Length: 185
Image 1: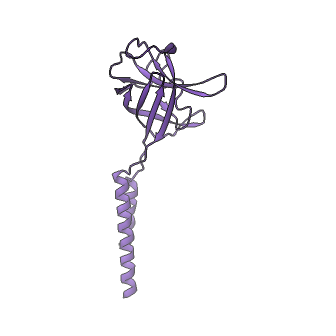
Image 2: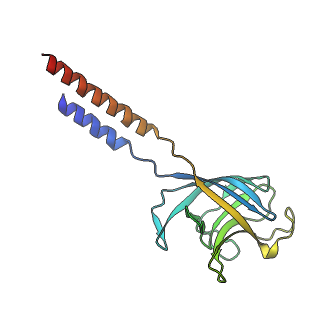
Image 3: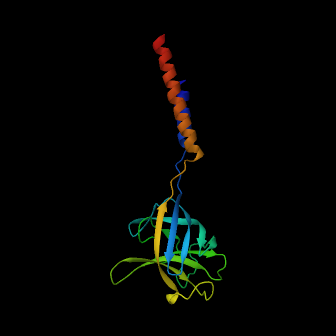
């Protein structure tokens, strides 16, 4: 019976792998830009300049009231710079290559990217509107400084985690029941 309990615990631990994705909510507010939504990402094990980077695998939300419809693949040309779709949990949230996406009502691709201001080293967060002449008021050479906030959404346990927790309770309950029976005899 003891071997069966240990075998069951081992099997449950093998199937209950931890979640590797993270979800972040974002809000970007600028002079002519308002965007809000979520990024779905990988686990953040990639290091870029010594910082953990999350690879964005999905985006949803709105951009100036229009639905964000598509995440552009990494390597997409965003005004001469290929996107890398990397996200950092702390400011400078993006690399200069940034993340590209599409929204309803816009003829050109959109992207969030970051760059360092050489004057004071402060990170600025901007969105680049490539080739858009209508739909937005005119922007300073295609870039608007943004106030950008990012927050990690709380993790939701996967079914395998619930199975492992319930299996653990069953193992502890079985061990306690067996022990009380042994003491009574």
